[in-house]
Picture 1 (cartoon, rainbow, N blue to C red):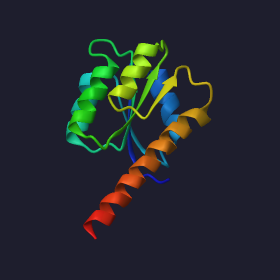
Picture 2: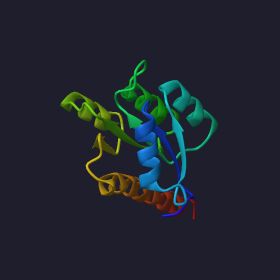
Picture 3: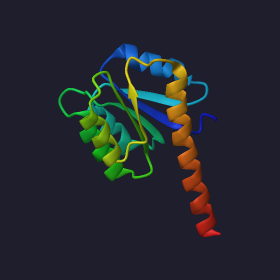
Picture 4: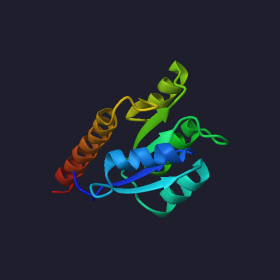
Length: 136
């Protein structure tokens, strides 16, 4: 892994934003944060993010709606949903609308977050390989 991957973390809690940045290490990833769905989508419109972690419980526009907007705007963006109040409905909706994974907050351990991000990177690399093969 290297910092060629841009990550956007979307959560209203500074504590979670800080924790994810610490887990992912800014020297490994290029990490940005947003505290609302509107701010996050504006960033997505103006820049390319490979991986987006979204709190499913955002106030105002919920995280599932943001997931849908991001995937319709950039179908290759790898999205990982997070929630402190997980429900079967949230998990299934996240999967239905293209999320790679769903993490329970607070995080049990850093390794689980890293596994979700590494899986997303593997998917990106497989897509990249397929595109390269196609254009050869």
